[in-house]
Image (cartoon, rainbow, N blue to C red; front, side):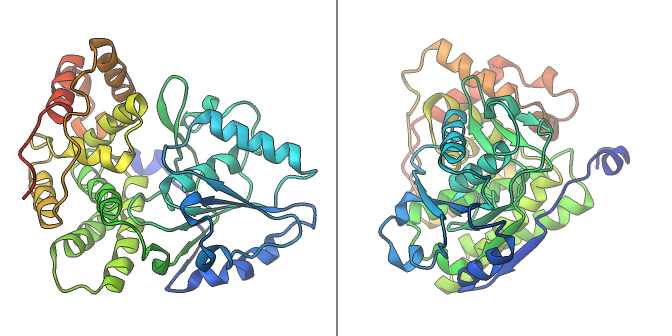
Length: 375
């Protein structure tokens, strides 16, 4: 806890309604029905396009009247221009504001749904709201249904967007979902590499929160729960597939709650720079960087390497071997702009310790170094 002022100054909203359990996705229609404003105010579903043609999931989406499914690719992380285009499309296609926005997918789809719900009720462009507490009006009613676990996007008060000048979230009290459905059954077909990278996003949330200067009793309780779950999921041999799915969904939720009441740190700041310049997905970027952060998180990195070896994960290597000094400067600028992350990781005097030169060295170690393959 950074002094008693932290308790007074910071008050974060929580998702007000949560449903958890295998098969709970089938309750979506019952949940949405009383929220429909009228026949002309549709529910808009943003669905990961990996489910296009997947009747097991899409046939259970409770469409009625003018409701619409919009399939969104998660190959690239959301951009501000993409959000603005989706908002404009909805405004032009319908006479009234939607009754609600529903995101069904991973972290990218969660962020798209949250951002669109905000921008439907706020003027201007989404890039104008990248930052902390810039949103003025409450978002349209919005629901999150994660189909992969680890990002914590289903619970967080931010929506990560890549804008024309930076990669930064819309971080506000109006961002969190009004309702979340946590159905571990929806995660059953996630590919192994994606399962690991996204799960490690949750693990890194725990490490950065529990080792940060913003740590308080509230965030510590959530972080420790998620940390223990991650160790069990990624290092034990006794879990069934269903147990692992259930536990990782709970770890994701608790890890997201932990950083909601504290903050992330070095790996996330550097991953944002990597994502902005090269489009590297957030989970992979966290893993690439975290693998070389022993100086900041020695025990956490040691355990991460054990998890990586156990699951035979080989991280991308040498992805920045040909970067110019100007490109490195761009990454460094994006990373250094995330001041709350550095303050949490290093302390109030972080600018005296984290220089552009040091950050360039860390990037070079993480992104150019060719290590021996994981055996």
